Image (cartoon, rainbow, N blue to C red):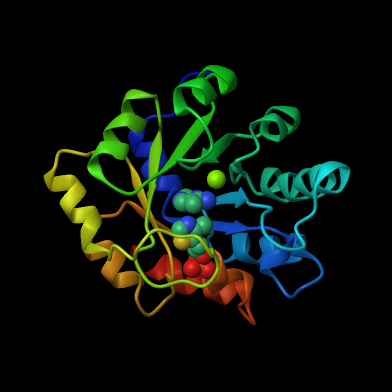
Length: 217
Ligand SMILES: Cc1ncsc1CCOP(=O)(O)O
Ligand SMILES: C=C1C=NC(C)=NC1=N
Ligand SMILES: [Mg+2]
């Protein structure tokens, strides 16, 4: 298997759903995920973090269940932070933050699987590219209460500034994105948008995913 091509990566980033068991009131995240995929989700990240998150065998079991939902629909399955779990499940990739250790080290561990890195400035972006990232997660572009310890809100226009600085790797915007402000993310030259609340807390996850997909039409 070779490294993913940039144009394929950009297509996968269009509607990137991120969730764990603590992000949805629904007891069954697998059902929310299946509905969201039916609505047009292009990539899924299993992010099991924060108060009440499951761990150990429970986390592995939930990961397996969610991966099966993705595999049935041919949607790649990404694991956040937990490289060991990603390898155990043979996930399609991992996403790491600046505090999750060296991206170069993770690249060595995961081979040609997809590697996403959270970056907040040009220096971090250039380092991630040098370390072998396939895409960058940039944000929070809008205010969000989902992740407690985010950096300052950078606005969707920050991604356009990264482009001006010569950062051309696929970029997905994250943070407080929903159907009404998603158009600003497109204007900001992001290749995709990623969401937790907009889908995980939606009354109708399929409709929520469809509305987010519309912005790229
Ligand atoms: C994981 C993460 N990283 C920056 S903001 C954020 C949370 C995004 O959640 P939401 O889409 O609910 O604002
Ligand atoms: C913090 C994050 C930033 N970006 C993405 C895509 N995922 C994350 N978990
Ligand atoms: Mg992390």
